[in-house]
Length: 264
Image (spheres, rainbow, N blue to C red):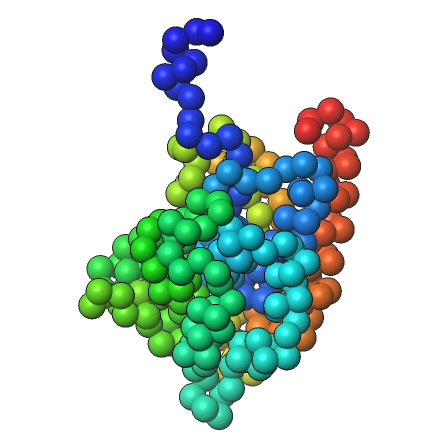
């Protein structure tokens, strides 16, 4: 074997990066199911916001179907709905308790698959990658959309949604992986929307988040953007199963097309 190849070898063969997207992030689980059926499993995962949730559950040993069932649970759906009369704040405490109870691993080090979670340091305006220590703290930080959700305080620092600066965390694992599969649940689509306070606010945030994904899309060896994701709202929690199936079906079709052209 060439010595140059040995020294240039990267620590992970296949990495998967999961974007943010609210409930649309459940398409990640559908995509993971389709990839598994082709014998593709990640050696490392990177996730932001809902991608961090799905990534943590998958790295903890939950199957894609089990993840979909968790999202369909009525108590989970209730705690992930925003209530404008209550000030528009997500019940972050209930979500934190749910994740603490559900995850078997309490730290990154206990996960079955290495995981990197992206959040935003609100105090310094910096993108931060968590890969060790308390798992749930990092997940909650990564999911805390500013203004709508309360910032998560970790070691005296305020953290908000990682999507503010990096909604598609491909670059966080690119240099460590031979191949990276990127799953983007938030394609930039100027679709129709309802004129409500919540929809206008989330639409504005979505445009901001989606605008920072272009660089990372170019870093993917395989980019998966499930079709028709623009038909769903960020907090359309009653459509979880539809979104899961959409991710599954569109990925199966994409992989079949790749196989037919001898790309995969």
